[in-house]
Length: 337
Image (cartoon, rainbow, N blue to C red; front, side, top):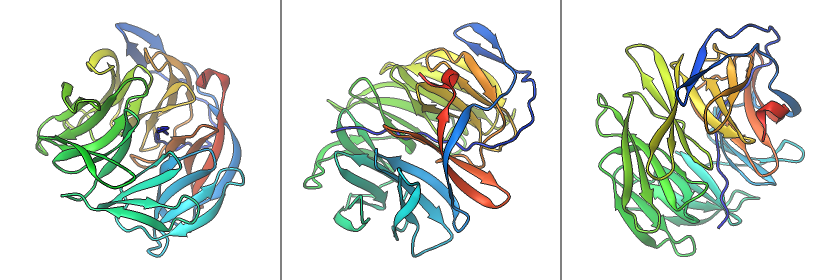
């Protein structure tokens, strides 16, 4: 099975250039923030002003799939990636995630549904013991998270191949890019610290677990070396973006004192730090050390589902006074591998 990894973010076209005053700490050192400048060039634009709360879910080379609100008869969109136009619409109530894998589009919406990726009609539907919350590809296989367990699913039959018990409620699920590992972010109690755990997709055994800040609900950004996670602290109103390496979740880098709503995203070979509140500068950084490459204008309106990369392009949601827009972008050379 092939794997498409979705990441999240929004970008703004603010023209003013400011000097970033923050210092980023990575691997024990500090990197002085640079002057802000445009971090990408817009290739195409699609207006989503007819919808509310758009969320970028998943993509392949031909299509981008977007969840939207404000229209109960069409809350799931297929966007053609060549023309950047809405090519199909469908009603998929309670959709929480989607993953495109091996020519099939899988959606979690209480149940696990397979949709025709062209027409968006339902071609298969599988029920789990509990409502399906999230889906991801880990170790080349389809995995689904419920409130109490991870399920490895045979996509041809819907049969459960493996069940892994969870003792925490998952908020985010993502497969490793380099080894048979799946990452889960969640918490055991609302007032307690969040949990980041790594599980073997070969055996189902937990490989490592780390305690994260109490308000850490994601997003998480998976790179070839590990995973970046926001450690959010409500008492201070700040966030530390932490990098955990591999299946052992060894802490290797920390980027402290970011605004509370900052989330990490991985696209075009770079780590992106985006303030979901749209106030702080956007940063593209080294995906291993977190060292800043460039700083750009503030971006982001929301906490999740705003930046997505496919095999052929990177997409961003952009909020304007006229409403939300979907942008196909090309990052500058400093923000791409």
